[in-house]
Every structure is written in structure tokens, then in C-alpha cells.
Length: 45
Image 1 (tube, one colour):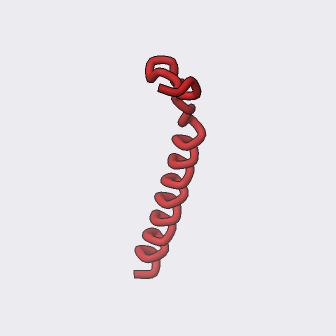
Image 2 (tube, rainbow, N blue to C red):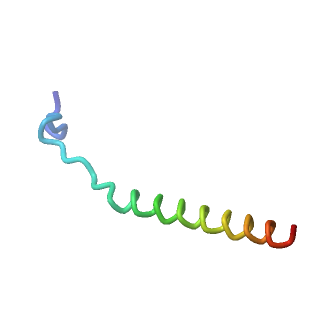
């Protein structure tokens, strides 16, 4: 085994907080857009 490999118990996992926030913001944008189009459709109907 080479020295540049770290044992699995010492490996630090990357933080996914930024990814989680980005996914929440994208989901919120999609929901708001869908609701805006839906209410526009209902108001014209």
C-alpha cells in the first residue's frame, strides 16, 4: 500500500450544506413559478 492513501476512518467527508441549500433554493423557485402560472391560469379561466 502506498503512503499517499489515507485509511477510510481518517478520510474527511466534504460538507454538503451548500449543495443542500442550492437544491432547496432551486426547488423553491420551481414551486413559486409553478404556483404563479397556475394562479394565472385559474384567474383567466
